[in-house]
Length: 335
Image (cartoon, rainbow, N blue to C red):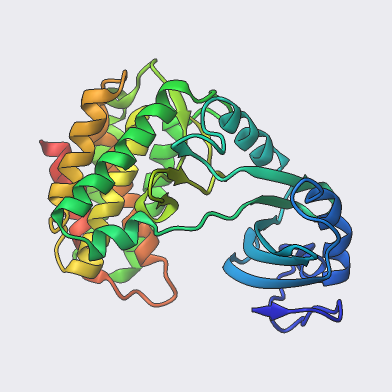
């Protein structure tokens, strides 16, 4: 935790020229100036401020827990500092909240509090509760089944009622990206480059079959690490990638992310297949969208995307997982 009670941030903690306002956000004197009006409905005069870096993507964004002490106690909010203006994320969250995902809903999102343009800072509600990732890794089959059903029902509602805003996912851009991802894997050697190229080629060949007119609101990276399950509420966060897309894309992302999690922590891509089957059955039985025609293509695309993600780490520690993901991508296309 960064304690900046004197109002002077420690430049050695986070120095990122790509996010020019970051050090200013971490200055308690500056933060107080912007936080007090932003939190006017939530807190009175701020007496002290503390910061904790939660996640830092150099040159892109930094997520910070901001704790403000007021005469009535401590108040925690989440701040996201961007390299570029992302006031659109605040507007998108506000619209999603208004259309059935507000603070009193059982299926919800973190509530947006304010956007501070000079700091490129988004302030939003801090959600308390276990993430689905923790639940599926530590729970028994009954617990995993319940978690999978709740995740599917959240996505069903989101796809059905959320406003369509943001860019429309472009399949040409996605297939071009698939080629770049395969090239990123080429440096690993062995059979991986060949399998990555084969999967990329198959995605190009089959792209026409993935085109559809029926689009909906998209999350962009819906997965078990971005969903919190409270006792009676399911809350999904991280809205930086919101868009308009084929509903299969979000469904595929959740499934393949669970498979990657299963391999990484449980030793097998199939270790969470029961939870995946429950998620998919629940979504298919309750959603107004039929994803059967395009789901395999998006699953294969996501396999290549997550394989690239593992290969792109400073030190690749999951070579077997990359191989498994590439094999799974080819398998679902053949099916």
